[in-house]
Length: 231
Image 1 (tube, rainbow, N blue to C red):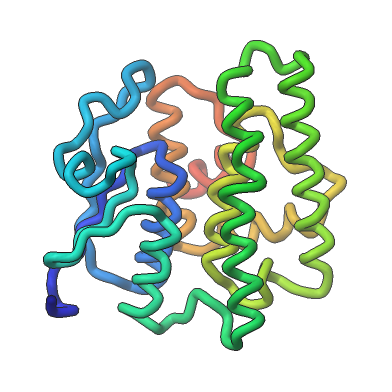
Image 2 (cartoon, rainbow, N blue to C red; image 1 turned 60 degrees about the vertical axis):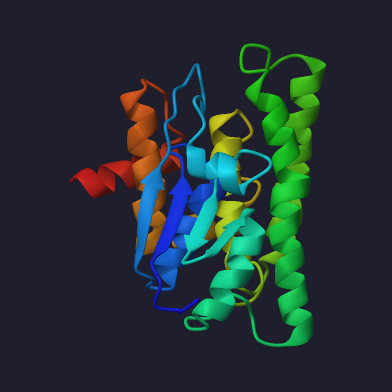
């Protein structure tokens, strides 16, 4: 396979994991085709896109095709992109720093996001114990990230996949009733810094506009981002 082969990313308008990959590809100035698979608020990803069905046993986006190579899972795609296009670097330099960044990316997906997923089915029951526990888990995670940001601009020291992963995850947390608040001022400034990045603004803004088209209420920070793009 030649590195010059076309890159095709299959994602969806509300795919957090697909958005992560799209932001990374834009940050790396890669030329790629974006295929948004069929999505409906009620039917979700039905019917499944045939390429997604063919490539991913989990039948989910994102899926990346590069020539005769087909990949799924946002983290695996991240790793491939970093070797395909080493600059700009999106993992920190140094063995230990890179390992810490990878762990932060993993934690955003596997520690922070599961409580957010629980909240998705509890939108009309946010005062129930299960919803309160999920919100408390998110708040505890925010506090841990607040501590991590002391004396630094980015979660892993330099801007990285870890920042991309948590930004998109917390966007869904804010939508589902577990927003960041005044108790984490460094984290709020970090989010502003993230939202100012052109790649992040492009992808998150498109997601915000899609949500508005479906008559969904946007978190304040996302509404501001969308308004900036439409002014």
